[in-house]
Length: 63
Length: 327
Image 1: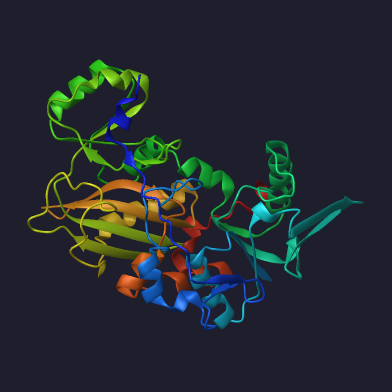
Image 2: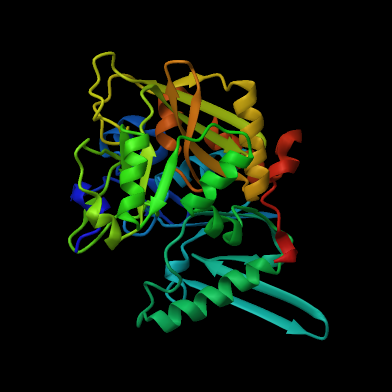
């Protein structure tokens, strides 16, 4: 008895990506290993897709 | 006066705003409610007719009465990372934290009540219609016969989740999908189904609204794009997002929508058809914006920072998100 909408479901892409930055509680920002602020490194953010609209997540409905 | 940001540590999109606030010299305290009792602490007291409260995180202490604005970005469930998490502790922590903050005069982006209501897609469609925005014919139903009749009337349909949520166990994604002409609608009886007339689009539009400021981006559809590629999040990308002008009538409708929804921030999705009409699809009250800013160079993070700092444009009165102490 699967709802109609789920006929169009597909396996979620499991992004098993380790982000190269870590949160610095002093700065309240994520920082790359070389000390740069992650948010200023657009190439890294694009590669990781961490700022994109991603068709939903477990905890947030808003893309 | 401090800007309080409620979000997860890994939220690099929030970082973009934190950076702008730092540059402007605006005090910021950022915390994830998930860390309550395990890195985040709170206290509130109501004695002899006065009240005050404090939050602390990472050695920072902020008086809740000194909070000028609250940005509810991507917070975790309160106390989710406590030493002994439980649904009861989450509810206790949620009531304590948000109750404290609701008691202040801070402006919200977005107020939790407005945010909760704004997530309901049927309500969004109704509000969009009332705001003068073009809304594609839509049916939400559990009646298979109603779905069949709708499909006869509008033969080219898409289906999408009502809630926008995606099923887990196992994790699956449910993109907006084109419905086959010979679809069997019997299973509509097993769950509310949202069917919508497919807009033959020539571009996707992402319109980010911050207070009274509208920042639109447009992504053209490939000339040879397949009509089954309905959902821009899953379709092949042939162009970056590009800055776009907002048609005046759309701008008026969007600002009416924001005022009606009592939202200070909203990320609108539209489909632009061959006649240039922007068809309202949805408004995500906490939609992502980093990818738009990186493609277009539009100052979305700076505009959010300005609003949080209290420097919003004169058009902000219609979308203050400012329920403050009334809630």
